[in-house]
Image (cartoon, rainbow, N blue to C red; front, side, top):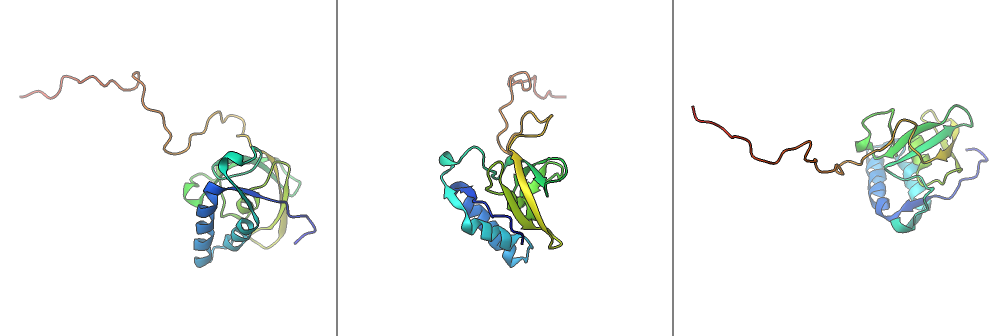
Length: 161
């Protein structure tokens, strides 16, 4: 790889099991990133969710990152593969850059190999949604309908002909 130092990573205890299962399943399916993700999980410090620092990249969280000290900052939500429905919004943890970002703190730089085998470096810039995104709801957390949207009073019902 490069002489770039490999930074420490931190993973929430609530995520480590599902991430490990994902990586192991990927190994069986010969997914190119599975071995890298598994090696990252093996070297990670695992903390209870309540003890996680606020500046660590984790699943279902926005991350602003820059590749190779170049271009503009890209913002994506780091996601499990099954939750990636829009490439402009989601970044799979099973992608090379997604696996490299997992567990890093803001300001950390991580070397990784891209799909062609070239050595790249990604840097975590921030953990904020991009401009224009004011609120992002996790699946299944929708609020109940308000009375202005749903009228629970019975209507006239069916009528006989």
